[in-house]
Image 1 (tube, rainbow, N blue to C red):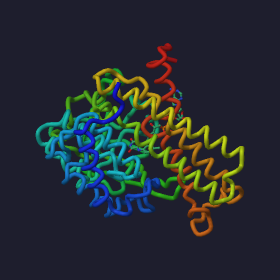
Image 2: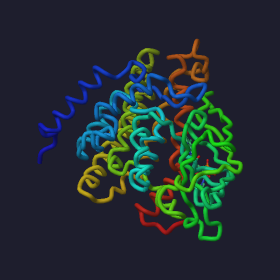
Image 3: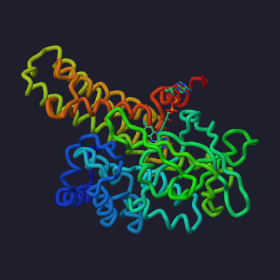
Amino acid sequence: MKLGWDSEHELFRSELVSFLQTHAPPEALGGRDLIGTDTGDIPQWARRWQAELFDNGWMVPAYPPELGGRDADPLECLIYAEELGRRGIPRSVHFGGYAIVGPSLLEFGSEDQKAMAPAAIRGDTIWCVGMSEPDAGSDLANLSTSAVSDGDSFVVNGQKVWTSYALHAEQCFCYVRTDPDAPRHKGISVLTVAMDTPGVTVRPLRHITGSAEFAEVFFDDVLVPVENLVGELHGGWRITMGSLAHERGGLWVDGVASAERAISDLVELSISLGRGSDPVLRRQLTELYVEVQSLRALGYKGFASFAQGSSAPEHSYMKLASSELRQRLYETGMDIQGSFGSITDDAVAVEAGRWQHSWQVSLAATIGGGTSEIQRNVVASRVLGLPRG
Ligand SMILES: Cc1cc2nc3c(=O)[nH]c(=O)nc-3n(C[C@H](O)[C@H](O)[C@H](O)COP(=O)(O)OP(=O)(O)OC[C@H]3O[C@@H](n4cnc5c(N)ncnc54)[C@H](O)[C@@H]3O)c2cc1C
């Protein structure tokens, strides 16, 4: 049995590492949580970095060069995720465009829509994804924003909520109900909606951290040309599954890598605060470390199945486990600080309030992309084979 990488993959790794060492901007280093800014805008350094990754074939390595990649194989994609994850380097701070919209346009879009994909992946066009509504979150099929055809256009009415980047987005990848009489999953379509179309109103929502990355988006008699329909009319449910399918095998890496970084930072924090010999804390940190390493092993096991073309049920568990684990890690970071753990004022707090901030941000990860409860339902039915509740 050989456990290791062959020379071809090592070459890929060294090329990537040398690119990261020479090109990654200082703002991208350090692995701090980068969710949102006070104004919800996308920082210029992040826009330049995403474009640079794209231009050098490092944005989505599995894609061909014209889409910001280098035709990488699954192992190379895993190496890519690991090297970025280890350094805490994000490739984008607005994932919707490259991770959801670009792949969906490439798979389902018309020729004109496919032509919009490179700009979405490069980050030149900022996209938001309009799925959630006040009565449709986990139960997305309940969405009620309507689109009624009047010949050349759809007339869109309704409301979206928790729409990331909507304040600055130029386009919305918008899920609408086009057939109110069909069974719920069968009456949904996807439209691309220019955010400056008359009748679109965006209202910011502030996170617990103070950042305004979210918004509510209202549609009042918004006219959307029929050619903006993505895929088939009433065929939108299929598109909800569209994301970086070829990267699915390695999507867990980032969660595990940030947990590993948090562990080593917790060790440093406990030593710097004179608590490195505290037996209770030592045991706690060791248990957390073992948990992270078990997750990494499980991730590799799932990746091995994925790379051989089989499904990887382990991966259903990874998002749930790593997001909840990170919450506990950041909470531990606050506990170690004792009474200072509740201070969020950057000027006074330990490490400028990093642990408090990360903990607040980590709450989002157990909600977005499927809540922990929904993930548990998925594991129960698809992994354990229990009947649906
Ligand atoms: C960081 C972040 C970014 C987001 N970005 C976007 C975006 O760009 N676009 C977008 O459209 N949406 C976005 N969302 C919204 C996200 O998709 C929803 O918050 C999520 O789907 C949950 O929906 P909800 O908030 O309506 O909660 P609900 O679905 O109302 O759930 C409320 C609670 O009930 C539980 N629950 C619901 N159904 C079940 C069930 N069947 N069994 C057990 N428990 C259940 C949930 O787990 C949750 O605890 C984002 C959310 C976050 C946190």
